[in-house]
Image (cartoon, rainbow, N blue to C red):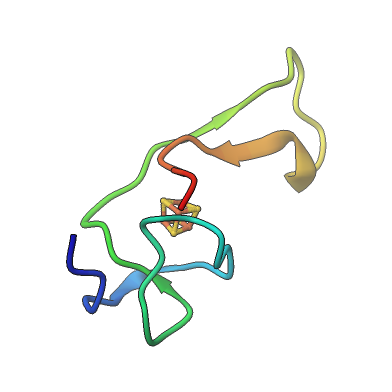
Amino acid sequence: MDNSYANESIKCTVYQCKNHCSSKDNCSLNCIQVGTHECNPTVDQCTDCMSFEKK
Ligand code: SF4
């Protein structure tokens, strides 16, 4: 997969993700899914990028 595309609308610093842009702090996907692993999320740490894929 070509990860040279940097989606300027999705900034991301998760370099361990397969979908991370190869040259900038952005996601290379056109869109992502965000979700939560908590019943009642209260802080940002409760949210997750569900489009994350291990490199
Ligand atoms: S899929 Fe999610 S975690 Fe992976 S690079 Fe894109 S925004 Fe970051």
